[in-house]
Image (cartoon, rainbow, N blue to C red):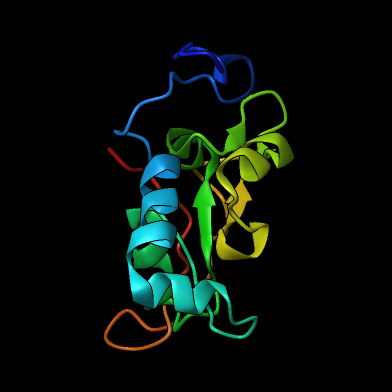
Length: 130
C-alpha cells in the first residue's frame, strides 16, 4: 500500500479511511475481547452488518440477514464491479465471509417477511440507508 489511500479504490471504490466499516471491523477483532473470542468459534454467530441488515434481521426474527449493494458498498469490502463481497478485500482486512450478510443487488428486493407484531407477515421489499 505504501501510504496510498487509493490503493483499494479500483476494487471497492473508496479510499482507505476509518469512516468505512472494514477498518472498524478489523479494530474490533483486534481490540474487543468478546468479538475476538466470537471470531475464533465457528458457531458463534458473529455478524458484522450495516444498520439496514440489523433492522431486517430483527424484523424477520433473524431469518433474513441481508443488505443491499448500496449499503454494502460503504464497508470497503464489496467489489463495485461484481456487487459481491470481494475476496481481495476480505483477505486484506482478515474478515471471514461468513461474518457478513448476504448482498441483494437491488434496494427494492425481497428482504423477508416481518415475523411478529401488528405488521406480521408484511413483506420487506426495500432497504435504503444513509
